[in-house]
Length: 251
Image 1: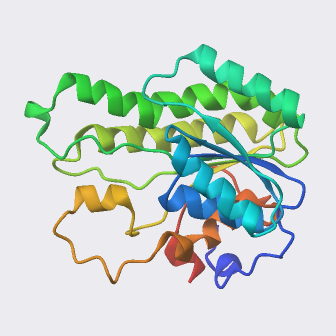
Image 2: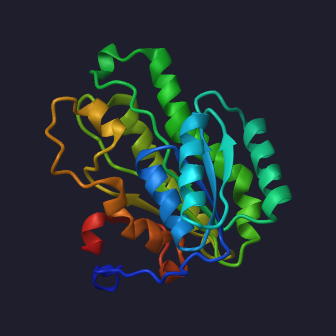
């Protein structure tokens, strides 16, 4: 894909009107910004996360702005099993009748440590939340997505394949492969488009934990990186699938 079509992207005000979009990790950071941005452009957003008070604050923010009423679905990705995701898909079908978009944003950092010293239990937890959970959630929701006339699956896949990034780096590399495989499997016979975003350095709680000594005042805020999230979730990206976009392509 050429960069030119997405540079200075200006989404239509009603870009996501009448769409139902599920956002994981919606309680803060990029997830909160994406949920609010999707709602601002007309979507009904399902806020998924494990901390109910955070989800309630985002819900209230969306309601106060007069956007379409959101919904809250609490779930702990570290401990959820396949049945939990099947129940979620059944609830979405019952309440909304369809699913038009799925943003895989939730992630846990684990620890930055050499592989030789990485705690095995923590490794399993990170892989469960960052890689296994997106797979199980996508699998459970695929039939709903297939029934949409213009569905989108978007992964947040910031690549960290270097020393000490451990389970986080491995899980994000796996997520990139998951995205490409799913895109290849759905391109020919469905209206599902599957892509990922590497937003680069953003001022989030996860980054603060990874770089506690960093002077982050110059970093972009989550609200400042929403252009690719809107582009890949809406009809303007109908011609692309299986791609990893960066924020630089939207500047």
